[in-house]
Image (cartoon, rainbow, N blue to C red):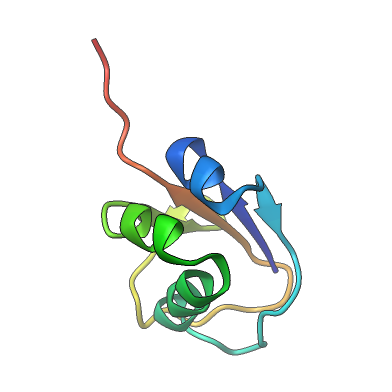
Length: 80
């Protein structure tokens, strides 16, 4: 599975993607908890307002993840 970080999530994580350390069969909620632990308080604070999409679709915390899934961490977008 690949996790892609965008905008402020990318800045807080210090990377645009993560590809290792995720267990098969984990839920989206477990993945988010793993990301908080792995990348620390900076990303944890950003994650509070982020949407998490899996394979181009919005996800819920209880959704199961599979090998090959692409997970996008999307902070809110502001415009002007």
